[in-house]
Length: 114
Length: 112
Image (cartoon, rainbow over all chains, first blue to last red; front, side, top):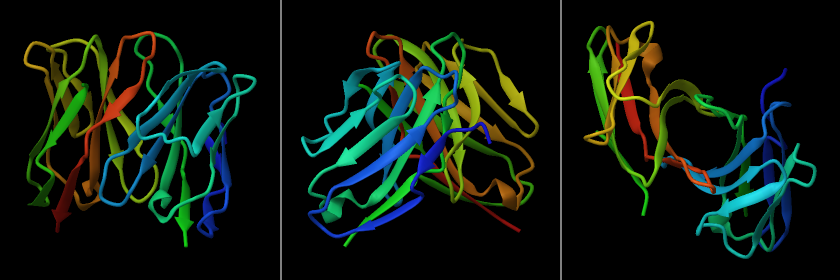
């Protein structure tokens, strides 16, 4: 499978715990996006990397959220001191920096904070 | 502030009907508009539009962009129950800090 891969697919955690998700983009893609999607809503943009540089963070991304892409390949999204409102599907997408290329999404990580 | 608005929010039709989904946007330095289909899993790519007036087609689906009036439509002809999904519109800006902004989606239900 050469698509975008996310791990884990599901995560249940207690409020106050830290969680970390991983995204492996399509290998030649140098752009990587993180989104959050709650039930009945469209995906909300969180942050975006071009290679290893984090170019933008959404206002939705509070101080408890951090994302890295240390070598310009895979990326991690960490949520510290989780709250019940963090329960959502976290989606990763990747694309090429080139004219007329589309982004491809992973299957997502579903987080449930209890 | 960048904005992407889709309408209607939900739509119920019968098999064989034709539907038109709308997406209007306000984005500084527009680069491209994308349509995705989302069923129970992650959204899957349908079309990318960058130029006005050029229709893109894939089977029963087609889409066109109007950069003057800042909107796009997605048409589905001869709908089938398998077309039932949420259709998402996303807009990408041509800035140094490029990002994609999504609309809330249109939930299409096709009844047999």
